[in-house]
Image (cartoon, rainbow, N blue to C red; front, side, top):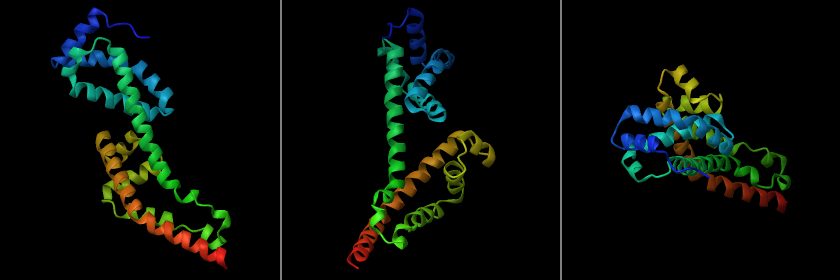
Length: 199
């Protein structure tokens, strides 16, 4: 599928491995566009594809000494990128699954009062309210405002990496808070469901 790296690329990899930043930029320019297209096919998200490409090249730079053992850079690049993209998609899936946990309860057999409950979303609001102000702004602009990292960075006068970091920390904090309290809510819903079925 992939050809073994040509001599010029092999030399480029050696230069990158030795810490040559100019060679690293050349390597990035040579491969980032094709890699981005490939990641877009996997993620179906331009923003996520861009994030994967940046993360992967950062990882390559920080572990550049290992490039001396890479014979086929394109194959190596696509394998680690695919793995990183799949990990990102799994994280997103977990986050979406968390939000839908209560939706999976059969609301059809509940009373209208219980079926229409917003206890879960109140819990989510509580979790968001407990975030530090800047993290809260970043989270709300991303999740509710649907703004991209760059747009949030411009609006809040932060770097893109800071926005990304705040969003990751906020998501973890909210997820942990919700999971800590979710069991109580689910048990309460089940109890209420049994109550209305009994009567």
